[in-house]
Length: 183
Image (cartoon, rainbow, N blue to C red; front, side, top):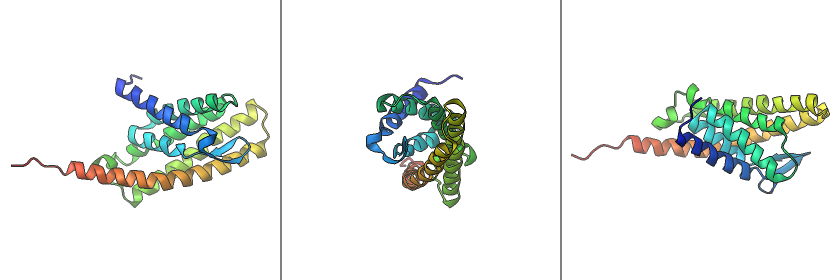
């Protein structure tokens, strides 16, 4: 994997925004060590704009940063989960053939975005929950509850914030693609 300097900078900025934005002071605590964080919209945005590799790395590194600064230690299982979420949402430009770059974002695109967000959260944090029960002997009911809350809450948050951001981004792209040179 050969990442350009621009891609590395994008990953660093995305991870920093996601990591700092994921701190408990910016989130809504909902369950044991479980916080709904608006930073999920940052992860979704970077994933949609730059694809699955950037999405994975922004999620993985960003969650690591959150755990480091939050003071509860780095939970690699949940760090991995955030990476998987970013990777799955990052499939959006591939599935939609990067229509957003052409200024197109319709209901079908939004549905694809929400479905990817949901499956990303279920699969990503489902992996985290599964690994927690195996590696850390966490009670299944606890991690399953965390998974349900996170999957539903994050999907809702990503859908609401993501709709406005992606819709406006598509409008902006559409305006810039209609530029013509004056005679």
